[in-house]
Length: 119
Length: 398
Image 1 (spheres, rainbow over the protein chains, first blue to last red):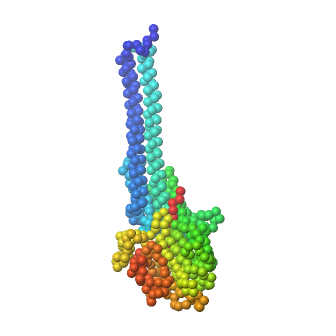
Image 2 (cartoon, chains in turn red, purple):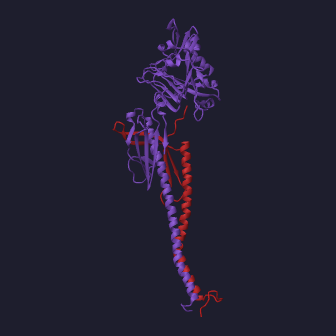
Image 3 (cartoon, rainbow over the protein chains, first blue to last red):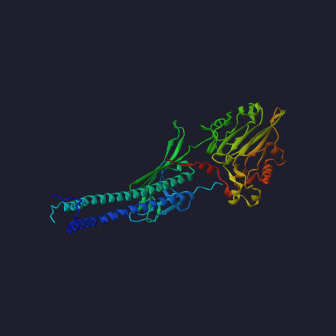
């Protein structure tokens, strides 16, 4: 006689225990992977948010010319084809992020020449 | 319990299903997470590359603009710039730890199909990790008043033809005849043909820089004169390298050949408000009381380096040039050869008024200064002609 699944009789204890063991083993095996994945997704969100706020801050500083006065030397050739060097002074703007540092520095750097104030 | 018990098999089957599904789900989640992190990483590198590229372009643009001699300006592929993470500075020497690299090239490209006009392009390429960003800064073509589409005057003769409407440019325009010394003046058609309304033409640009003298009318052209004429210069900064206005007395009346200075409106009206001049302390202490805070001011410069600013009286049918021209006394030795004034919106040099004064042009200028229509610009706040020419803007190109 074939037992029907909707039979009122339940699983035996052994069956339940085996199933729990299998599921627990599986969950245990994949838990770190899942946890790490969830952490990764969260981290990506945080870093992305940090990146956009860094970009906003960089754009603001570029527009307001708020940076550290620095000199940059450029080397190359002039229009006569002779080797030459030029020193320019401008503002170096560095914006650091507050996100994780695990995958490298959260750092944006640029250099801007303040516009001469029109008289 | 028997293993062949079908109910047990269902339970075990379910567990085995989980054995397949759960790893699949976990792997998918892990891959998604890794992809997200990679995307953020790429986004970060891309953003870093963009700002580094802009940094390189800005630095080279400044090197280009601050070098007055065109032959000494940077050109071609320049040495790679690195941003050194140890010293937090840009360098051309490859450091052990660097954020990224910037390669900048300066070149000339044809601005028009006929390749007559060239633009200077500063192209900056930054590499950070696997991301590459390229930005371009482009100059407008070097624009002279005689070049297309302006065609304000004939460069060989220096004469302004009879075109009633001229194109305006929101950029500095240089006025120079071919040899540099031939003055720019009204052509005979402008002063010999009857006009509808007041005879006047307007040249409009952000700045107008005369490298050749502006002689509003030449003696030879006065033979056919039928009326006076007003040349209107609409610009925020006007630099004269010699200026001559004139008055012609005829039996029909007195005609004036003069210049009016106005402030141009492009997207907005250019010039500085009087309140700004006061806030930024751009005027001498003694002149502060003459500034009208709500009025707008432009700047006019007279370069006396070998050139004069004068008004010449002419009389027709008797002798063409009569009387003594009235000139501004040039600066003395050891003084700046350039005199600069803020002019209040719409200022006209009036030959009649100048010639009526006992001490002529000098007295006229003094009176205008006392009236507050002209305000002397302190030497430390003056701009030079070279500075104005360098203001030719670069713009970011996509």
